[in-house]
Image 1: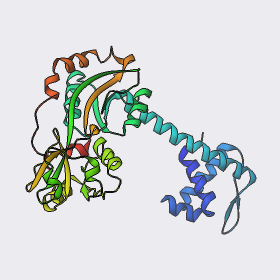
Image 2 (image 1 turned 30 degrees about the vertical axis):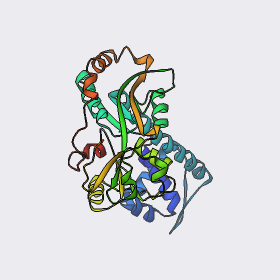
Image 3 (image 1 turned 180 degrees about the vertical axis):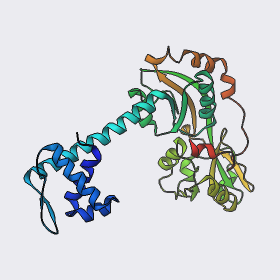
Image 4 (image 1 turned 120 degrees about the horizontal axis):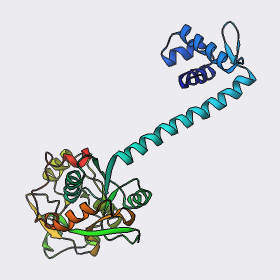
Length: 304
């Protein structure tokens, strides 16, 4: 029976028109490719090529076979991806979060302790995408920015997070120490968090007239916020220490969220031990402000 690599070689010859050109592209010798094509014709019991001195062309049967070969290779690629996805989903527990928060990694450590023989992967994802993949069983658990309305989910509120603006001391907004709104910041050049997630999505929505100066890494973010005189942001669980800046609360209701741990109700029995741990150790999710975010301590957000 023919093999998939023979079909790949067959399609390459059909595409490039000569055995020598196809052999060059495939990085194999011309005699080896010629033998492979002859073996394929033998296996199929039909000629696939019209051979001349300097060129090779497909017969009508060859054209028909090439169409089938391309479809078959496409199905093989799809099969490979599906098998890998099945393995990924069924050999590990995946917890997806709307934001890169310490809660996520506290949960990950707890999950690894409860399910000692199963790998755990943490992912930062858009909440709509999380919802879809959690319902499909691709994700095992989720962290939403609020209680999700989906009645299929069992949810536990964990910790509130509040957003603050870091305003330069010489900025007019620095006088509003009691609090400011997104509308008052809108139009200013600001430096968002260097991590994708809920807060940056919110800033993009609430500051449509602002220039959002995204940084490509935690290192560049750290350098820019300490060297510039621009507005940036922090939260009670993702603090940033900045000299010559004033920490001012944002008054909009959207500036405070409560993370909710969620699983499918249908999997509640499987996760019962973990649920008990979360309920019994809720205090660890409500710690006071931690240490300021530094490049060395925040790399895990990117590695996950």
